[in-house]
Length: 107
Image 1 (tube, rainbow, N blue to C red):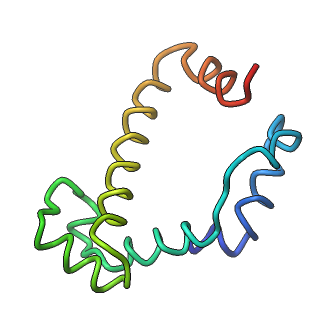
Image 2: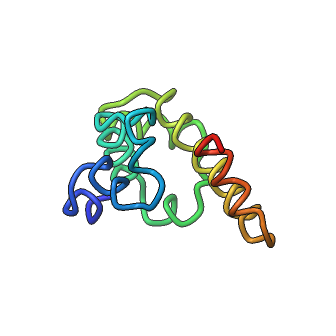
Image 3: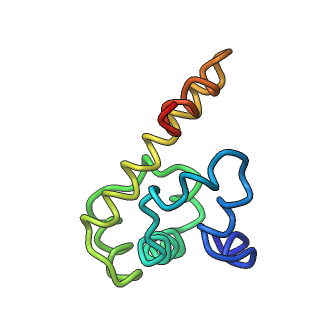
């Protein structure tokens, strides 16, 4: 995330992707949410970042306190991570990437 910030805002980065430039205004991008995610990730130990499944309730409370967020925010990030993993597994299947991009772009 820090390296991406050096490149500019998320909107700036996405504007370089083919086909997304026209739809960019329709995408809900909240820079504050990205900053919150970064704080949560930075509050995790290396072990927790490598294997988020070890994060139990007490670890979630510690991460939330350390990042200045709530346990609900930590849970939201962990759910998003799991969803992204599922999506990446699906994209490995032949032809799935194109169909997923078409759905994303509303084509």
